[in-house]
Length: 121
Picture 1 (cartoon, rainbow, N blue to C red):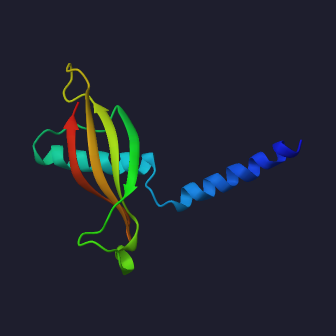
Picture 2: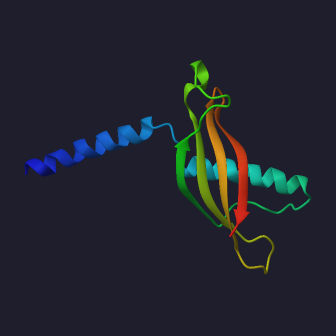
Picture 3: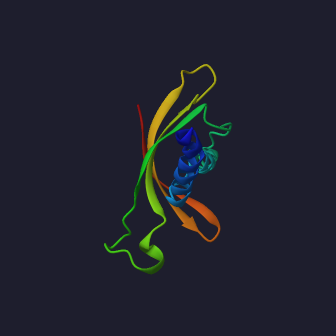
C-alpha cells in the first residue's frame, strides 16, 4: 500500500522535471516546422501543403551559443532538435519522410524555429 501512495508523487516529480527542461514538446515542434514548411512551399509556388501526415521528435540537445561561452540571456533556452516528418508531396505520389534538424529558442514572443537542414530518407 505504501508504494501505491508514492506513484502520484513520483509522477508529479517527473512531470515537473520535464516541464523545467526547457526542451520544446513534440507538439510545439510540429506546429513550428509545419508553419515554416508551409511558408517555404508557398514561396516556391507549391501551395497546397497543410500539415504533415506524421511527425516524430527524435531528440534535442542544448545548443551552444555562437562564439563559445554562454552569458546572460544567451545562457540557455536554445535547443537543437531532430525530427522525422512524413507527408505526401503531391496527390498520387508515395509519402516522403524527411529527417530534419532545427534550432528552437525561447523568445519574449514564444518559441522560435530556425531550420538547420533536412534530408529525405
